[in-house]
Every structure is written in C-alpha cells, then in structure tokens.
Length: 457
Image (tube, rainbow, N blue to C red):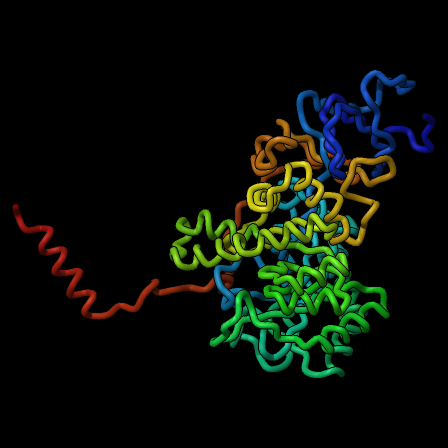
C-alpha cells in the first residue's frame, strides 16, 4: 500500500493489543512521523527499504499508551487538605508539576486529564507541553473546581466565597455563569463541578449533594454554549442521577448508585470514571501509611457496594474510564497508573482486554481526542508501549518498571531517565510535633512500664 508519508519507525515482531478489545495478534506497526501508517501482519509483501529504523518487540506486547482520566498533577502528593490548600505557592506549584509530569510519561502514561488544578497551573502546564517546553504526556485540563459554599471534600477549610486551593466558590446564578465563562476564556478543556461534599453531621452514603439540579443545569448550558464539556465529582446516588440528567459529559466516581441513578446514566450514556485506585490502595496497603482499620474498611466498602452497579452500567453500554487520582500521598505520580485496570479486573469482573480498552480507547474521551488516540489503528497518533510479557493475561505487568521496555509518544521513542532527586521547598509540607497529645498520665504509665521491664526476674 503506498503512503503519502514514508515510515520513520517500524515496531516489529510484537503481539499487538489494539486497545479496542480485539484479541491480540502478531503484527508490525509502521509509524510515519507522529502517526500510525499501517498495522501489517507478518509475511505481508513489503517494498520498504532496510534502512528504516526498527524496534524489535519480539516476544513482547505492543499496545496503546495508557491514558489517566483522573490525575491531579499540581497537587504534589499532599498528606492532608491543610497541606494542599495552605502550603502550596503558585510559582513552585508550576515548576514542580513540570517535573512530576515526566514521571507519568516514564510510567507509560501518554495522556491524562487534570480536571481541577491549583491556581491556573493546569492550563499553563498543558500549553508548555504542547509547545515543547516541557516533556510530558498529552494533557487536557480544567481550571478551579466549582464549589458551593458548603464546600467539597475539604469541608470547613473552604471559605464562603472566593478561591482556595483548587476550588472556586460560586454563589448564585450570576457567579456561576461568570466563572464558567472566565475559565473558558483562560483556555480550559473541561469545567469541573464538585457536586458532592462532606458535612459534619451527614447521614447519607458517600457524600452530600451540595448543588441543586437547576444550578447543575445552568453550568452545562453555559459551558456547552461555548463548546466546553462538563465533568462532575459525584459520590452518591442523587448526585450521579442529577448530573446525568443535567447533561454532564463525564462523571467522576458515581459510587453508591441506586436504581434511579443507574437508569439515568444508562439513558444518557455518560462516561464514568470510578477512580477506585485511591480506595484500593488505602484498603489494601493502608497499614503501611498508618491508616486505621476503620478507615481502611470504609474505603473497601465503597468499592464493594458500588462495583455491581458500575458493572451493570458497563454491560448496558455506559463507558467506564480508568482514572487513578494520582497526585495524593496514597497515589504518588508514576507508581499507580496501572492500578485501576487491576481493580476493574478484580472487582468489576472485566477481562484484561476490556480493562485495557477502558484505559486507552475509551479514555481518549477524557483528552477530547476520541478517534485520534488510544488505539493502534492506521491514522491514529503513534502513542504506544512495548511491554515485556503478555498484558492480555496480566495487566499488573504495566506496574513493573522493568517490564516497560519502550514508551513512544507521537512516533518518538522517549528517553525514560530517572527524575532528579529532590527535597521539598520550605513550608511545602505540614509539620507535626507528633501523632497524639502528650498527656502526663501517659508519661507516668510509660515510665512505670519501663521500670517494670527492667526489674530482674
């Protein structure tokens, strides 16, 4: 087949996973500049000259690069909301994010969505990546998450008005419209709404819905008039139902759905990003971070009580996307971008190929690049991975750095150098005297215990 472009790289001999759910097959990938020219089966007639660079993938998996649909690149792995909201400086946030984004690329992430960022750093980082100033994956971004004065998951740390951390509090119709328009003027790809939050005396599963349907509909109408999609943070049945009915273009979490919420998401076919990686890490490995058994059980419960409804939505045609909430201390950059695939297989009962499709071709919607990235097809951008082993049988291979042999972004093989070692700038983290109050009774008890232990037998 003649090509307008001559191949500039051939990835040959590998077992190809196309990212669309088809069975793996042995094939060569012909790349021309930044795009896939052709997927060629072994033995096909070729007129290609021998001097075209070739990358040997014999015995390895060749697949699309991972896309992370829920990553907070500006947060820099905080341990608390206090640290996140009050210990971050705008200039340093941008500089450190430009370093951290390279960890994603080294881990096989060739695209990601940062739906809400500190200050306006998401917009600036995306533009720097696209301009070739910073090396990083393809990126789409929101601005500040829209909050009501009830707050989001930071509760009382959120002021009654204005901006704090990644959030902008909007009160009433005029402020909602003004902020949506301002963010679109600045250049966001998405408008994010924090539909649910935490209150001190709530009695609902998940979080409390803190936006009315009318307010949510207003956001959608304002954003859509200007060609911009809307994504919502929804942990709870009513919030998921109302976001779907209001016309949201994507929903993060969608946990604790009831039948009414399930019907709404099936009717609207709104993509859902469950983002179970945070909960799974806390439930499975929280003891290593000092998390209490009660907290670990609570987060495990969210997965268990939500998995069936999410699977029913998926079986009914609702796209499920893979997002990891990378950017917190429980989900550091570069470590856990494969983990959502593992959870989809383990807890939602997907096959590895189904989970891979959720992390690649389906996730292209988060980049607003459906039909351009996320699959190994002629005409798509050449973002792909070469992995030692059969990922169609074991998705956790994607979490083993030694297995990830090559990352190709836009047809270029990426140099995966280790990021420089760093220290935290002054005031960047919260500091603690200790983990509990030092009471005199406890001291007396400790002294008595020590003396008893020293007594001879």
